[in-house]
Image 1 (tube, rainbow over the protein chains, first blue to last red):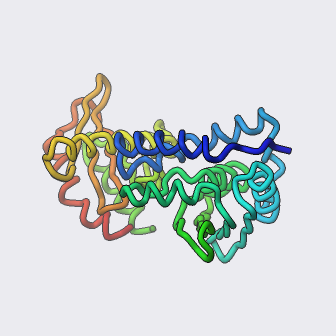
Image 2 (cartoon, rainbow over the protein chains, first blue to last red; image 1 turned 60 degrees about the vertical axis):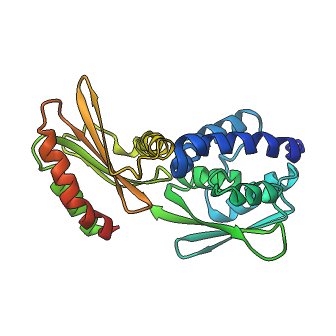
Length: 153
Length: 118
């Protein structure tokens, strides 16, 4: 079980960090998230949010979805695998407004924590290479669709 | 991707070039080869991407236009980097004594083919 996250405070911190990062490395900021994600995963494990049991897409859906919902990061997270594309529909994403604000300032959604964790878990536990292909609003305001491309290593 | 692999393979046959890596701006290693096998190209993606990213931002802040090529000299090697279209980057790891004029020329000549193979 994870604690609820104060998403407003986190959004404020992330806003500043993402903006500064984008100001320093521009379009390539996404590489920082790729680099950070395995450490985030390890640290979450040490803090008791362990994803090591995730060894297939169904478990990824269940575990990451459950963790995100329990932490108050979204209302639901549902994955589906279609060929080599892993799609996640995130309902009422807590970072939706943050992403929207950054986009309005010309900053792409490179720092999505759901995408970073999905990619890190896919690469570490599922033995795949993974890359964010799409992240965009979908459905009701606050809902987001994320597509991660999976490739054999 | 097979064509991309061939093109990258051809790069490391150029005298003085030890490794060639194509990475996405997100640090994803699309293809890479090291001719002596000593370099783990998979670990380089994020470093190359952010390294070049800083130079691109510098260019933007100084109003000198878009980055086309970047070269960094170290004690034991030289990195020559450039963009491949909007989404990808190429990094060549060269020996200290490499003919950098030729390396840069080869990069300029071959980059369009690499970009279209992506």
